[in-house]
Length: 117
Length: 111
Image (cartoon, rainbow over all chains, first blue to last red; front, side):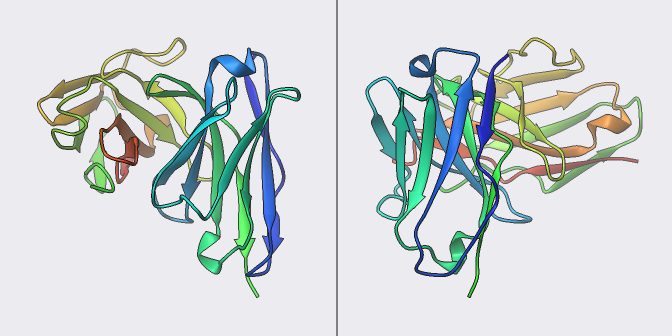
C-alpha cells in the first residue's frame, strides 16, 4: 500500500527556520515525483513545486521560489520542505503528494504550520 | 493566470446529477488533456477522483465522470449521495511558469 506520512504539526515564530518531512513507502520512491501543496485555512490548493527523487531535479512555482527549498533523500525515501525564515503568511496546511506526468495519485495527511509571535 | 475558475458552490438533491465546471485558457485546459479532479472533505487530504480528463482510478465510483470541451473541463456526479458533500478541485498542467494549476474549488452541497 502506498503511504506518504508527514511530520507533525509545528508552531513557530516569525524569522525561525523549519523543515517538514514526508516519508514514502509502498512504491519505488525514485519513480514518481513528490510535490508540495499549500492550503491556507479556508482557502484553496496552491502548487508550490515538485522534485524528482531520482535525480533531485526540482521545479518551483515562481510564487514560492526563493522562499522555500524542496529536497529529497532517496536513501531514506523522504522528501522535505524547508524555510530559512518563516513569515506569518506561511501559516497553512502543507501536503506532500506523489505523482506521475500531470497527476497526483496520493497525498500525505498534511502538516499544519502555524507562525505566530 | 493563478488559478482555474470554478463555481464557488453547486447543490443538488439526492439522486440528481450535478456538473462542476473548470475554466482555463489556451495555456492549460484547452491545450492539454491533463485535467484532474480531487475531492476533499473538511480537515482531510484531497483524493484523486478523475485524471487525464475522464479516467477514473480504481475504487472511485462510476457515478463520477469527467469531460472537456475547449477551455472548460467538467466533473459530473450522477445519483448524488450525501457522502458526495465535499469540496472539489480541478487541476491542469499549464505552460505557464507555475507548471500546474488548481481550480478555485467548488463546495458541493446535498440538499
